[in-house]
Image: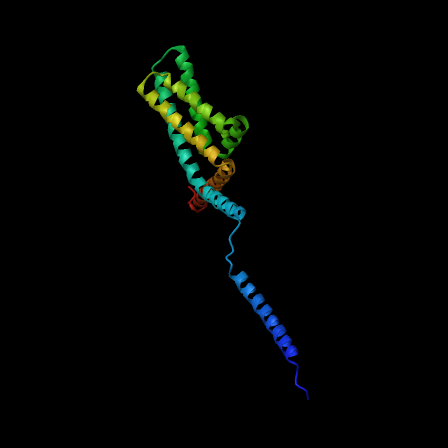
Length: 215
């Protein structure tokens, strides 16, 4: 058999080398592509950060609501006591009327923070401005100005506390848009606990009446 020409053998060798080189190039490219680090997009990172911050805020909201309720109850009771002291002192007609108004305002805040079901519905229908950050802020400032007009040390202290509560209430209402929803959920849980306690007490009294000997 005749030997293969040199130019044919060299051509086959070159084609094989080229084919082998192509395979190596594809393998190298695939490995390099697989080793490239994947970087998260800016949009996904931003949305994840926003979601985590929202969850943290929602978890912190019940504690903030409890703190706000205690502060509002405390300053409302102080306002009522201060106004009653002013009325007992028999001031002028204008100051007496302002003291009555401040007392009613303090009672309204107390009724709002007690979270009783029937009071909550009445306040939501007739005094819905208390759930608005701006109007609640103005209402607290109005009560603070009335307390300041008493011209005594206790009244000025109560006025300062009212201004502080006004700022804190506005911060909570603006910082947590879902305040009203969470507040309603907490109120419903409190209603259930109260109803369960009343039902338990009624059952206990009924059992005592049944088991007690009749005279």
